[in-house]
Amino acid sequence: MLLSLLIIIPFFSSFFSFFSYRLHKNFPRWIALSGIIFTLLIVIQIFIQKDVNFFQTRHDLDWDHQLIIPWISRFGIEFNIAIDGFSIIMLIFASFLSIIAVLCSWHEIKKNEGFFYFNFMLVLTGIIGVFIACDLFLFFCFWEIMLLPMYFLIALWSDQTEKNKNFLAANKFFLYGQVSGLILLSSILLLVFSYYQSTNILTFNYNLLLDTPINRHIEYIVMIGFFLSFAIKMPIVPFHGWLPDIHSQSVSCGAVEIIGVLLKTAPYALLRYNLVLFPYSTEKFSFIAMFLGLLSIFYGAWLAFSQTNIKRFIAYSSVSHMGLILIAIYSNNEIALQGVVIQMLSNSLTTAALCILSGQIYKRFKTQDIKEMGGLWSCIYWIPGFSLFFSLANLGVPGTGNFIGEFLILSGLFQVFPLVSILATISIVFSSIYSLNMMQKIFYGPCKKKFSNFFIKKEELWLIIVLIFMLVFLGLNPQKIIDISYNFIHNIEK
Image (cartoon, rainbow, N blue to C red):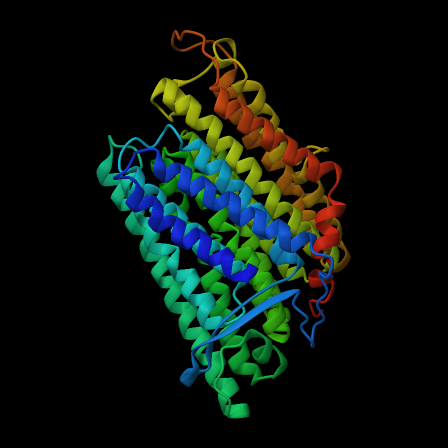
C-alpha cells in the first residue's frame, strides 16, 4: 500500500493543484508542496521500517518492498513497482530537490499557477515512477509521462521577452525526448520478443527478463538502443543540444531545478538496466562509452569556459560532469559506481544552488550576459560568497560531496582503466579554469554599471543554506549513502 502512495499522491496532487486555483490562487502551490512532503514522509517510513534489509542479489532479486497488480495480462504487462536501497536514495533526493524547486517558484510564478503546479507534479510523478518501476512497459510509460508537462513548463514559464526562443527550446526538448522514447520502446519490444522466442512467455517483468540469456547479437542491439535513449536524456555529447537552450530560456528556478532532478533518471537507468540486463554487451561497448564520456568532459568544459550566458555556463558544466559519470558507469568498478551515486546527488545540489543564485542576479539586473556584469562583489551581499562556495564545490573542493564523488570515481577507474583515469583527472583542471573564470568575470574587477546594494531574499537565503548543509553532509559523511546503496552496487555483475 505504501508503494502505491508514492505514485498516487503526486499524481492526484497535480489535478488538485489545477482545479484548486479557482478557489484561491495560493492553493496550487500549497497542495503541490504538501503532496511532495507527504511523498517524502512515506519514503522515510519505508526506509525506517525494521524489516527492510536493502539486500539484492544478482540472480535472485529480493526487493525490500514490491507491489504487483495485473494490468494488461494478455501481453504480460503488470503494474509492478518495487524499491531497494538505490531507489530509496533517489526518491529522498528527488523529493528534497522538488521541495526546494516549489519554494523557489513560490513568488516567481504569478500566472496560471494551477497549470504550472499541475505540470510540475506530473513531471515528479514520472520521475518517481522511473525510480520504482519493475516492469519495462511501465518504466517506458513513466519515462514518457515526463515529456509533455516538461514541454509546457519550458514553453510557458520562461523569459517572456523571448517567446519565440522559448517555444524553440521547448520544441527541441520535445523532439529529443520523442526520439529517446521511440528508441527505448523499440528496444524494449525487441528484448521482450527475444525472451518470448526463448521461453514462449510474453512478459515485461524486469525480474524475469534478467534471468534468461538472449542471443548475443540481439543483446548488443538492445543495449545500444537503451544506451542511446538514456544518453539523450543525460545528456551526453553529441546528444546534448537541448539542454543549454532550456537553461538559457528558463528563468523560473522551479523549472530549471526539476530538470536537474529529471536528468538523474538517465544515469539511474544506465545502472539499473544496462549494467544488469546486458553485462556481456556492456563490457564490449565500454570503450565507445568511455570515448563519449571523455568527449563530453572536455567538450563541455571548453564550451563552459567560452560562455557569456550564466545559464548556458551551468548547462555545459553539467554536460561535462555527466561525461565523468558515464565513464564511471562503464568502468563497472564497484568503487567507481559508489562514486557515481555520490556524484549524481552532489552535482544536482550544486547545479540547483547555482540556478537559484543566477536567478537572483537575473531578477536584479534583467540580464544573463556575463559581459554586462563585473565587480558585483561590492554591490551584492551573500550571493558572491555563496557563488564562490558552489563554484569551488563544482570543481571538487575537499569537504563537499563533489570531492568524494570524483575521488571515488577516479580511484576506482584507475584500477581498471589507468589511462582513462589520468585523462579524466585532467578534466578537474579544466573545471577549475571555467569555474574561476566565471567568478572573475561576474564578481571581480571594476563595476561596469552602477548598482545599488541589495540583499538576497530570505527565502532563497535559507534554501541556499540548506543546500550547503546537504552538500557538506555528503562530503563529510558519504558512508551513509554508500551503505544504503551498497548491495545493489556490489551485486552488479562484473
